[in-house]
Amino acid sequence: MNGGLPGELTGLTAAKSMGNRISKLLNQVAGKRVSGIYQVRIRGLTGKKYISKLNGGPHSPTSIFYSIFSNFSSSFFNPINRYSVPKNLSCRQEPLHMSIHISAQKGSIAKTVLLPGDPLRAKYIAEHFLQSPQLVSQTRNAFYYTGIYKGKTITVGASGMGCPSIGIYSYELFTEYEAETIIRIGTCGAYTTELQLFDLVNVDQACSESGFAQYAWGIEGTAIPHQGKAFTILNETAQSTGHPLKTCNIHSSDIFYRKTLDIPEVAVINHCLAVEMEAFALFANAQHLGKTAATLLTVSDVIPTHERISADQREKSLLPMMELALEASLKL
Ligand code: HPA
Image (cartoon, rainbow, N blue to C red; front, side, top):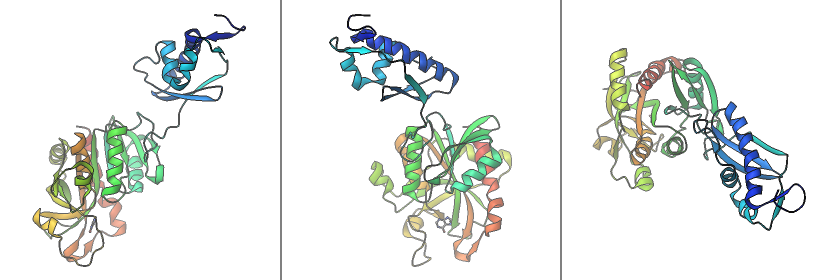
């Protein structure tokens, strides 16, 4: 004790004593759990700290106190102020909202993420293909599950529809979580009978009239290629597993309903064989951030002939695409 009333401490001594208690508490809690953000409360004051199990948890008591309560600490270090160090400290792992649109805890999203548009398709894949799937985020009912496929941790979650939506989810997955590779899995409409119902397409370049890439990142032009090695790995995996797979350019349209069935100019110029609505923004984000991205599509309708996969065929027809994406993930 360094002066003042019994039980009161000042300056560094107080911070060290408080830090010791916090540090012990954090080590106890983090030692038993996964790394994550831990919340500490002292007398109604709340502070947060990211604790990694790998780095052995907190270090110097004063620095731990300082990093949690940096606003509070300048008054703590003032030797004129006296503090009695309270017994009722609490520490718990936070139910975190780590990014604006995804509420998964840090560390709970895998390096490889499969991204269907539809949340219920993400749920289906998690429940049918992953071992021990955990629902890690359900903000806006965009379900994200992390589980194990043949020994590898994989996350599957929903991108929503259109460039703005996948632009948000893929950006947060890449920048706020550990995602290195995103494989979009979706459906497309064929512009030509060169493609048939149920065909599986690996997208070479996504082409669009969308301003997403230009206005977000200053990426000029109407075509953006797949990013990184996932495209090649998908092709190689398709060969080795016997999944017939075609590669081509596709149109990522901003528009689903339009006046005519004419093929839009941007799709003609770029030799796009089919249309969907998301790959362009995914590839733009991945290109800007130096990440890996691919898009696998199943042909669900052939626009010139008006053929389409029926509702009851849909679930089964998407299985080969899901299997191929999962098998390729093992090599990423
Ligand atoms: N337009 C856009 N996206 C699509 C279509 C389509 O016709 N079919 C499947 N996804």
